[in-house]
Length: 247
Image (cartoon, rainbow, N blue to C red; front, top):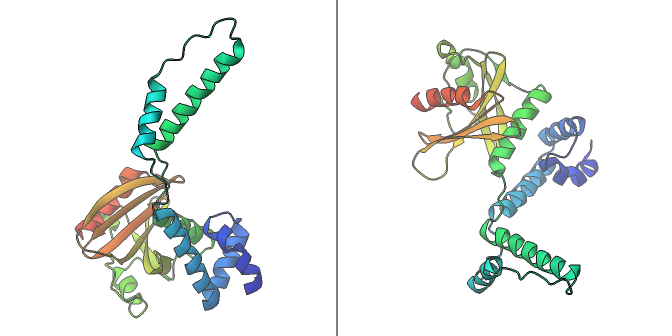
């Protein structure tokens, strides 16, 4: 694929709407084309800004009171002479009022775009056969490999004794920056551990979520941010998160 073919597909790509073949072709092109890679980052930044900003309209208190009042009112029973149309009119008013009340009191939110991006990176690493740039179970081989490739030093530990052997690492792109991806295995399950410097200060306790069928754990510790993604169940993935936090 060339640049002219890539550009119209950016939005479909970041929304995970492309098929596997097109996604892999785009990944390969982005690795070799700085111009398109920059354009991709701009699309992701705009997508993230639109999802994170509060663009909803908050109904004024007067409207909220009116909606609540409507829902509390009891519709009079229509007489036979009023006909069936009167009954349907009151039912329509009641349904409209209930819908408005739900929209006002319960705004709909979306998934964290960062976690969506992490899951997509995990899936692509398995489909594109780019799981590791350095394949090794030796932490003293994997850790030095990152030297000079990142502006920070990720902690690299092997947890074979605890059932989570280190099998390698690679570079990836997440949260608008190049990050370290440490790869672990638990049985037949592959685990991607994305690591990059955290913004702000303080620790963030591990938070587990299920996203598109994958367990995702996100936490901050020791000045680094960790995002673990796997098809493991949340409890087993949390065991690895605990090991990383205590290292």
